[in-house]
Image 1 (tube, rainbow, N blue to C red):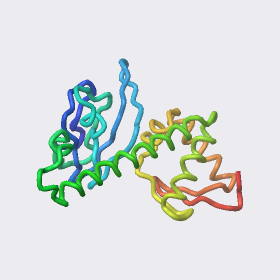
Image 2 (tube, rainbow, N blue to C red):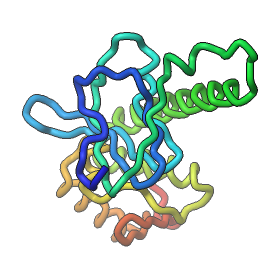
Image 3 (cartoon, helix red, strand yellow):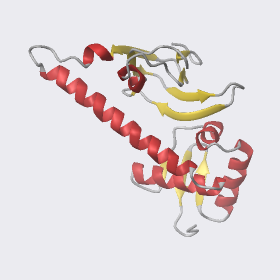
Length: 189
């Protein structure tokens, strides 16, 4: 798929899960007027649409857009959910991986709800950046989003997000350059 192509469109029936082999993609939700809510980024080795594929007759409520040239392996989930008569270990491993992926995504969505439940742009930023520092094991880390994508992910205006980041940097809470952040202890919020 070329950059900008839809790997999956909202409203499309979905019986297969996509496994991103190469490239990068974004899972987005768009309203009637074209406003985007960025749900997550997908890296090679990650699946998408597995929840819809596991629910018979469901249509996708999200779109998946290639952020770079991408290759996808489509997996028929209904066939995966029926065990082989021989009970091969490969089939079992695929099911375990699928369940683990669904669990991780559920945890990430719960985390996003936690970020969005914060009342201010600063609180949303601090919640998100703190979670990323913990996930990546230290105060120095990269995020998978551009400034606009981060604003979409946190459901805030880009200009307000940029202004708040600048204020937080001036107050000594953090430093950043593009998508690289360093959280500082001196300016504890």
